[in-house]
Length: 316
Image 1 (tube, helix red, strand yellow):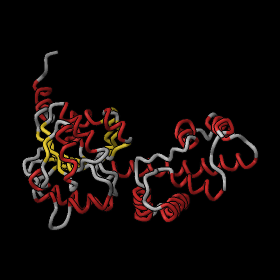
Image 2 (cartoon, one colour):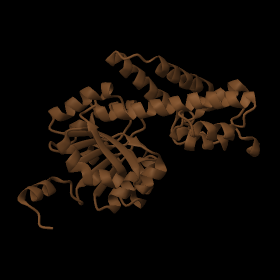
Image 3 (cartoon, one colour):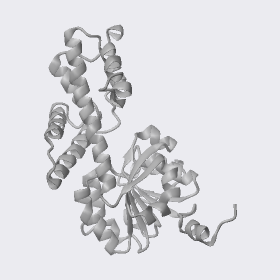
Image 4 (cartoon, rainbow, N blue to C red):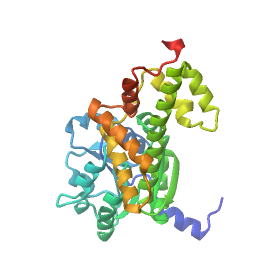
């Protein structure tokens, strides 16, 4: 197909393979993302406070740089893939902010689930330095990161989103610009709130049915095929039946994100009675079990209080 001058101009604005990408964070998400970006032809440099991951980084086809400032100094794009809000704030604000090292004209892409309220001032600081900003918190776990099948909830200006699209499509197979700055973070918090809320409500409902004599699997099938059906009922509850509480994410991080949601409700003046209950139950699970890995440990708490595990009779 012959391209018009406008098509040529737009194509030249897209981030090209060979661009230098600095990834801050080589954990269970950052490392496979770095591997995929390197395999796609980007020049990937990775930094992390844990220097013991250096060998894993080089094995992934990326270059290791132990000093974050040096890693960012020549970046076309800085990607932050960090555990949560405190880590992003520590890295990107204050006197040791990595924004000090980023060259003007670079772009900061934040893949971390975070709070739009916390990140607003940091994003404004980045723009004041000539750094473009795009947030794109991730949906999906390490397996999806490894296969490039994450879901991204992007927030920022359309031009920055378009320019980074070749990179985003290496990371994810579902990429959506949901709106301006802050709205990507907000969308991801909405998803998390509903999912954690469904976990609590579903566990309570099925525990009730089990106590009344209904088999847990029979209850799951019945509810999944009703007006109350959800992806949680159709898929995730089966993992609980097998004793899997999704140890892909720390319980303390779940609470951190739910607390960010309740703060956002208060900031916007929106009623949040149910959301506060969901947050409180997860906080109680954190008090009971500590900061263990397990996104569904609130369900484990409810099982403990009911004195009954959610298990089908056929699997007992």
